Length: 96
Image (cartoon, rainbow, N blue to C red):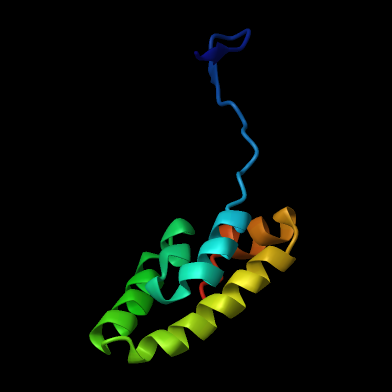
């Protein structure tokens, strides 16, 4: 439903930006080597890098990707919603 002001102009509704902090944090900790937490945040290139590093090395690279996912997951969960949105969703900080 559109909202119209007194002059007949359509008013854009303002929704607070949803934080993906908890979902990305848990996925980073549990299945970090697959890079799913990167895809959740919209970092497609970084997610593909993590996924390919895990798959193309037959799992050897999964150890390194797991450590990265674990660190990122813990980092996401220790931030407040406001900090997380500012750092990872607005400013697009892609690694750590």
